[in-house]
Image (cartoon, rainbow, N blue to C red; front, side, top):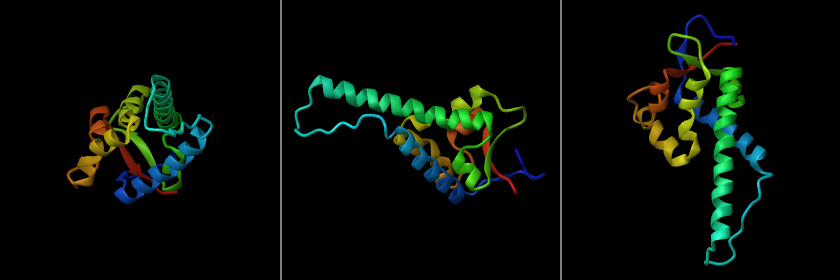
Length: 141
């Protein structure tokens, strides 16, 4: 991973744009999942089960997209575009760290709550980045 000699914390705007790029890629990857149209307001259990299955499969694939790329490559495609990467605080990055830091990506609401320290300007890390001892850094090409 081509880090500059000095690690810099990633600016929020780059992190957001990198996430948008990744979200578009994930949307394309998940597009083969069956879409479920609700044509009436009566939900039967088959529809509820289908909705939950699609949500669960989509969420697992989303977390795996981030975790696998961050572990094996050190960055996602969105992070690559914006010269960002994942770094471990201290020791070498391991899979449990990248998996833990990506748990909030199961749900948009969880991710927003997890991102509050950054949004409010109190930290350069999300809650789960602190717990996993990881950070998003900027590197020069």
